[in-house]
Image (cartoon, rainbow, N blue to C red; front, side):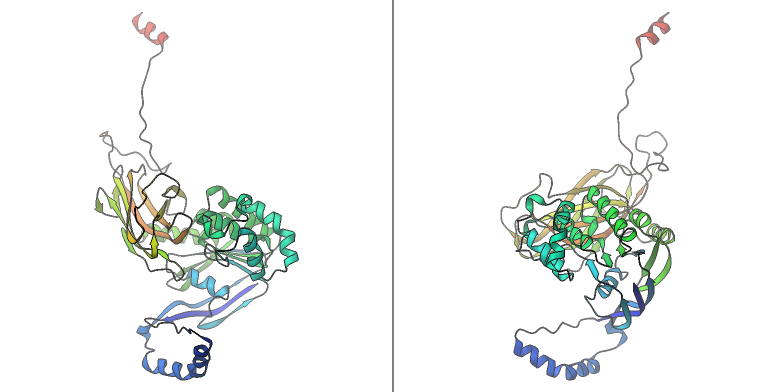
Length: 424
């Protein structure tokens, strides 16, 4: 169903895209583009000016196969999916796709914010190449799966990120594409809906004999859903093996990799609200090493294109294997409200003494406004909790059988019969 033959994708560093303000500009650009390309090649073109997001990637995917694509941030996973989805052209190599492709790469891709959920189902279905009769036949099933009946005629710009994802996935999965490509967007949904989506993807692959490409940092999901996996590192395919083997390699790399107490982010191309950086503080000091029982604070610096009054931050802490442990969001609990709209600032989230046992953890960040998330960074930060004698007992709580300790209080009250026996 999918054949990837030596594809590569390069970008010219520091080169601005050519934009056309009018039809005349566009026409002039077509006539002058050969000369411009020659000039660009003459002026630049050194290896130092070129960044290869992908290089010499080869693999095949059979009909009905569920392929997991794993790798750290910046490994080239999203670029690969954009090439397979025909959103961007490869610089070199060739891709062959046999069948209709449905892609779910970013929250709300293919949706028009001013249109209602009902209208966007038809719009998105048309983009996927479906006839109106086909969409109508599947309409009730899509709405029931997405669980948005009450908001069906509400503009999707007022949907939360979870509602966006539910509707987008429902459309993509129910309109029967031969190839379904799913990126990290499922991480935005709640746990119940993630299970529902995974079940639907299994049904799509096994029952319909369709092909699924699944990118995720959740190794438990990759392990349960995929039979086979490929791993990308630095834009190159370094492993093509069973899903179990890919997960083991990824987890080993996450445990052995560098800790990240602070990370700087670039602005996503379509985001009007974005995170500039994030930092972990342990006991008020920037640190990626956190002794058990210490206070943890997360600080995020953000910027916006237009003033907003309700910046909202969501945080999920997971194990290196991708199992979500705890999370919080300023959108779903009492929090600050700004007196005046702002175009930037810093948000701090104080967790207090987090009851995590000694091992390595990753932090995923979601940022947006009161309605939806505009910028998501999977595995944005990595920190390690170290053992500590919390109660002065000369030993630390064991971390073999669990992930968290609970600072519970024990008490004892002897029975009456036991007291009488002692007195007697």
